[in-house]
Length: 178
Image (cartoon, rainbow, N blue to C red):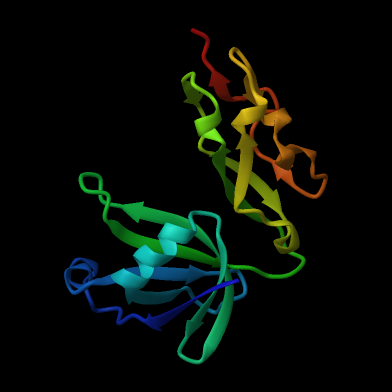
């Protein structure tokens, strides 16, 4: 499991000033926390983490001697340049269901030579921490021109412990014809 070291953030520090100093502000939220924790981490560490993981990633945050098993709930980016503005994490508690989002990853795109129209980029779902998933893979080498993939065709839809929060007939991608 991925681990990030973070620090508690001073409430009086302005987020804009922190970002100029190469620090990304964030928060840890959880029903069982006495209060939300304001945190900060280096922009370098945040970028490295987001190259490997994305929204919906499960990880451990180490903060001032305490460890938190969390889910990355939200990534806020600047609209113009896409720079990371803020990261929000949610503490995972065993036995409690959580809303997550699995990123759709297309495999073997080089095996087909027709355009792929990806209509959905992530699948929202609800599950217990033991059943969280970060990605849903679609193997494009198994598809032909004119094929359509719906939510009901995805592997995540076939796991009884995961409640997919999109309609089963929602179109995820389309292999366009010539």
